[in-house]
Image 1 (cartoon, rainbow over the protein chains, first blue to last red):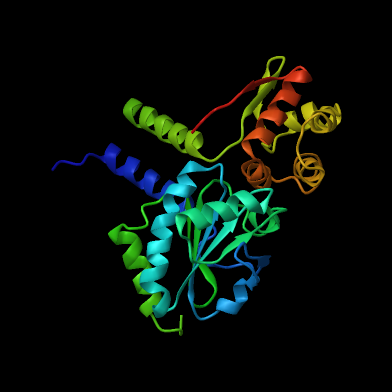
Image 2 (cartoon, rainbow over the protein chains, first blue to last red):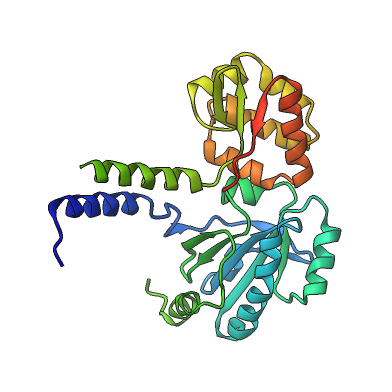
Length: 170
Length: 113
């Protein structure tokens, strides 16, 4: 294959641009939060240190969010005994609709209610729905996924398994 | 070289167009993404007092109005926080915000991505 100098320059520029577009959140310490659950009780992120945590932001008016939730439930059931925690964070103004929705969808992982957006806006500055953050055993954000994802994909499962089975030495 | 420039322009356009955003507001000949950190938008919304009027007439919770003002018109200006605030709004609240802009002489063009 003949690669001319123009193509080489082009590829170099694209690589540099893509490098700077790498999510800035990756590997930052996950901000701690304390929120009430729609199923009862309160949860604090730091209580799950030493576990891999998947945090999923959603709203009842977001169709893509609802489509993702059964996949999250499947993931939770498959890996909860191996140290995976899935936390849903709902941003509806009232709890009722969201609570009914998780009941109808058969969601068993904790779904918290961020009524004022303190976690959504100030701590995680979420810029799209749904948004999923993956936090490793050391409490670092290792992925920030914006928009609907295929959470059954081989790539996603491999990432979760890699994080679950790595030791805690970081 | 022409090919390179064309490719770069298209690439930058794709990246810019697909970043999460709010909506475009325009008054006169100027158009801005709502929340963009620019001097022009600051003059248009903050120095004229328009943002106060728009927020007053929109049906969104008071604490969110204060946050919008804070992240658009004060030293805490943050485009990312404005996008996050906008994402936090319900569809009804978003419509109400856009209607309030229209009421105060703005043109609103939603740019989906």
